[in-house]
Length: 159
Image 1 (tube, rainbow, N blue to C red):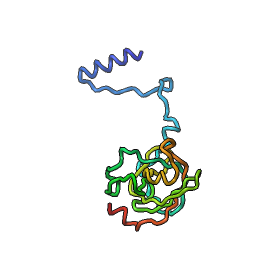
Image 2: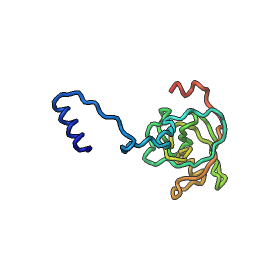
Image 3: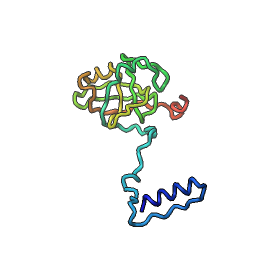
Image 4: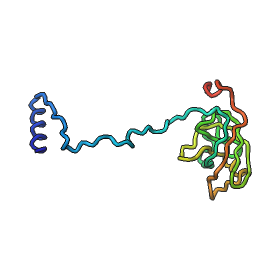
């Protein structure tokens, strides 16, 4: 039956006729949207976190291919400085990052956006990663990020 109906619709379209499509019947294979399709996806640009609360998650090391590229604050990424990237901390935030496995910590300045890999909360320059005992072999470590100083609220809007 579907084949004949399809041919009739095509013939009517070719003749320039107006076609009214039939309503779907309960027996037709029309699936209702599943609850999973109704779930909202996370925001592409999360809100800035000015709470000053510490966060625990995974830190990763900037790849060397990013050295010299402009960061979100307009400066160039340097492998031997304390620059770091966060998706939620305001640019210009100074924070203490502590490797929870080794206890080593370092002060960083948030100058870029990222990381964009699931579960990661901060990208670190190679020099900072070295201070924390994150080796190139591992590349990631569980860390605590505690903001020390937040820039004024209008600081990030000026960029």
